Every structure is written in C-alpha cells, then in structure tokens.
Length: 457
Image (cartoon, rainbow, N blue to C red; front, top):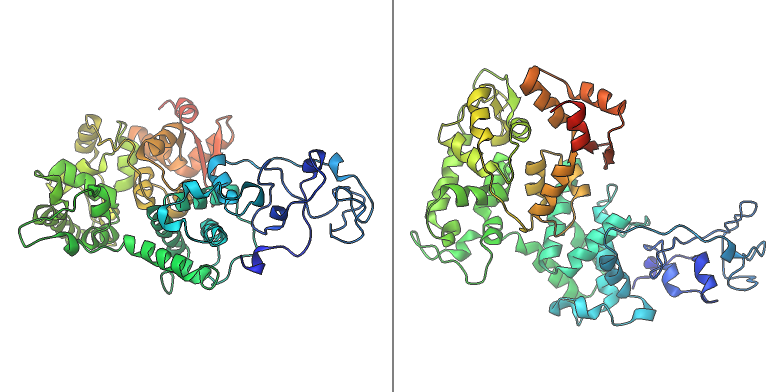
C-alpha cells in the first residue's frame, strides 16, 4: 500500500491492552479509526485530561503507558464504533489484517482473487471517501477518515464486483453532479491512479463501462430483438443508451421505464430492447416534448403521486401510461423542462384513479439511486446518503413505511383541507414528541405512524 495510507504518529485501542501487551500495525492505517476486531475507537493522544500529549514511539514506559506522564492507558477504554453491517466491514479490514491473513479471499470475486489485497483495500477506501458528503474531486486520497456508513457501502461494492462498483460509480457521480458539475467522468479512476495495480485499474475501467452498454449490441435487426440468455431484463434495460437518455430527459428513473414495459407493453420480455418498447419510449418522449401551457397552478406531479397514492408497490409505471394515454389530466408550466415538471390541478380524476391502484411490486429487486430518488420524492444527496449498495425495493418500502418527510405531510394536508406549507408542518412536528430520523444536508424525516397520528391523516 501507498505510504500515504499510514499515519506518522502512534494510535492505540486502550481496551486491547487488557487482553495483550502489544500494539497492532492495523492501528496505524489512516482510514481506520477503530480496532479491526473489537471496533473500539483509537486514540492518538493521552486520554488523561491533564496530559493530552501525542502518543509516540519514544520514551515508552511500556506499550500500555503514555510516554509523557506514564498514565496507564488501560484505565481509559474507548467507545465502540457502530456499523450497520459488521460483516462487510470485517471483509474490508480482513484484506490487510495480518492476524486474519487470507480470510477475505474466499469472498472475493474470481477476477479479484489474484490482485494484491492491499490494492483492493485501497480501492475500497477510495470508494468510501467519495461516498462522503465532503468527498473532494481531486486526484489524491483524502486525509479525512471515512464514516462507518461509507466504509460499509464501499465494502459491499467490492463484494458485489463488478456490478457493485458500477452502482457505486453511478451513485458517486450522480451526487457530485448535483453539488457541482464534473468536468470529466471517471473520478474514481483518477483517485486511484498509481495507487493500485494496472490489472485492477483495467477492471475498474471495465466497471465504468457496465453502465454504458448500447442497446444496439443486443438487437438483431429492425424488427427482431435478440436478448442474451442469462441476462436480467431490468439490467439490460437500465444499461441501454435509449433508456438512459430518456430517463435523463424526462426525470423518470430507468426502473420506472422498465415498469412501464411490464405494465403497458404486451409481448415477450426480450422486447425490452426491441422495437415495440422503443416505440413506447418514443411516445413518452413525444408527450414530454409538447408545448407548455400558460397555467402553472396545481401541485408538482411527484409531490401529488407521493401524497395521494397510499397503496403498496410502485405506482409510476401505471401513472406514466395513464398520462400518456390522456386518462389523467396534467398541466405544463411555462418553465416545464421534464416529465416530472408536470403539475396536477384537477385532483378528482387523479384521486379516483390512485385510490384503487395496485402498484407494481419489485420485491427483492436491487434498485439504484435514481430509482430511490423518484420513489421517495427526495433529493439526490439525501438518497445517496441514505442509500446503500445492494438496497432492494422491499428495503426501500420498509424505510418509507417507517418514516415520512414534512413535505409529504404538507401535501396530504393540502389535498384534504387546502394549502398547508411544509414550514408550518415542521414547526408543529418540532414542538411534538414525534420520533425523528436525521440524515445529511439538515434533512429531517419523522416517524410516519407518529406524524400521521399527530395530523389525523
């Protein structure tokens, strides 16, 4: 590993010295601020308040004492770092843990088994750093320490190589584009240049290409779809340029387009890359490109769907089909830029339609960042910090069933009794005892059951 992966001073896990009187090399890996076995947090200064001297390797009166004041470090055990997936973190640390040498190899993808474990660990740390809210766009690893959530997400990405890393790349790039446009893609490739082996760099480069497959490689002619055996239809659809461009233009997610295929297009599943579904995408794009109207009233489409649909599953495929077929009225503001920029003002036909709608259940299907963003009607940055690699639709539904954001509550109150601002809702919630869920970007969600009881929804 690069020398930059190590700290210059000394760190210890004080509680460990009750078990054995020796220091561990792992304690000096810059990205890990915890003991790989116990997860006890590390200290680099004497924990005695009156001292606080930096720990070093000079004038040591035993490995368990402070070199300056001789305080017994064993009397100052530290708190335990909490991880929501300890197995994933153990895999990441096992890659470079001398005491568990070789144990991580069994979980590695065959393409990674011949790579230097230190290089794989370095790649994982680079991914974790880019998951951070403050992750820089530079070409060097950050001196900051990744959070537990970021380490778990990075470990899961490596475990699901290469698709997991492709998902991580998509999530990182989407988040950073929302903060500040990237000059070029492949920020992860730049970050790991000269730090990992050429073969691992090539594998990473291939992961970048997973999300850029052209549908043309799957088609056998103007009227014939040639679907590759053993491929997941959703992943093929998600990776075709036609759906990627349509999703970018409309603001809808690839999962929504795939759901549209299931709900609105008859025929064989192979036609996901064939002319029938492509013509349906063209209908959506044609509808999306119509001239805007003068009126700009009503509620934004994503807000209305999130507030009015109370059933299970994903409502967007049927909603999109009903809009395109003219069954559900919408308005196009002058500044209409995408499908999700539409607004709803005639609420009665919408409420009647959504009240009896059964959404599509995607079950254990693994979803992506754009899918979660549309389903939750939340910002990219919020979802990126909530989202973990490998999250399924079922897990997202479980989160949605437990928590609600103030805007949804405000929209539901508006539909019931007239306009209510989210600021008013937040003020009432803040003064209540309703349980809160804090995420990044000062975004606060609340217990759904508690909030719905409070507002009698």
